[in-house]
Length: 468
Image 1 (spheres, rainbow, N blue to C red):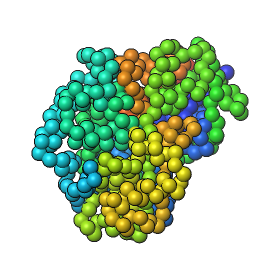
Image 2: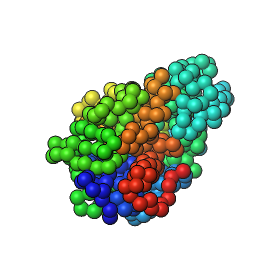
Image 3: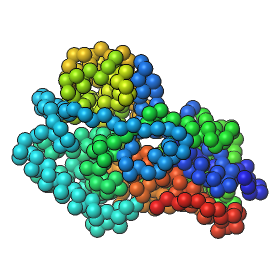
Image 4: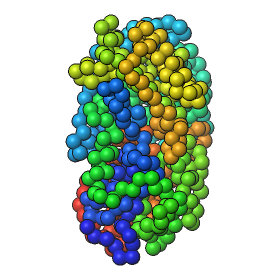
């Protein structure tokens, strides 16, 4: 590998999540030396895996769809396998105290409500088609769309209570917030990037179609190992980044690392934990202030078998009561364990996250029993993850910007500032908020660095696949 004179490494990457690691991997493949600095004591960022009572648990990012090409390609390269998400059987809807069985994506909410839901979905699809990918601020009427919340838009459409209830489940699980809290422009843009609302929510053919056998974090672990000894430094929060024409000086408690360029691959809100000298432009500073993460927590219950299948149930449930609002069956293929994944998001998470461990467990299992029967109360093992309690992440699954925070933010998301480049799933031009967006954003930032260094004559431009 080459290394420029007068620097410790060619590029410093801040953050060892999927995005930062994908950037580092791409940079190394172009012959550059890289150091990755991670505040946590592990790699993966918003992906985290665990084993509970013989069952696997992905406590962060979990699912991938058929068009999630960059993350699946990366997983294939490092030997992490995928398997389909179980969906055979009837789904369950718990709404207004009543539990009903159904098949497919749309729950049974009555003829009038179904017609209203179809009308709302059609209006949503028309509105999202006008959002340029990666440039929501260029959409016709962007500022007006950004000034509204999804909840306000639903109210203006005079939607039924059933439609509003179901859209609340979508926002709680997709962004970790309530419909009245999130910019309509952001929701439309996010859905457009995912190929539409249906693809974003569906299992077969959609974003929940598969998950990783060895766990999503294992992709990060193997990519980090392949970077080589000493390439990734854990427990090293970046405190300050000095940047200018001569490059960057990145400071941690352990000292200063000098490089030609830096890739900052942390959630937007976490950028404000770093002091940039000179200060970032106004758009970048406002982004860190206003693109706060949502609040989505996860809980897993592990049983000796997927007992719900005996009743012809898929394990997929939707509930308006909480704290668990959506579940999936993520049991191993041989059904040697029954593993249920539950999502707790938005207002439910705000209430549930502050409870002690025993009470959180009790309420989750009560939610599962309400849907699946008393056997759900007695698992072999249980674990939950509250992303809002992660000091260097702050929430999840992705940013949930409020009204007025999106139309002006394009430059602050991904536009380089001198030698500083930006990654992280929120900066992706496609599949923002998903693991695939994290990987493609890291690869995009790496290619920006290569082009910049080649233009300055500091490295020889090498060939490589650049993201679309």
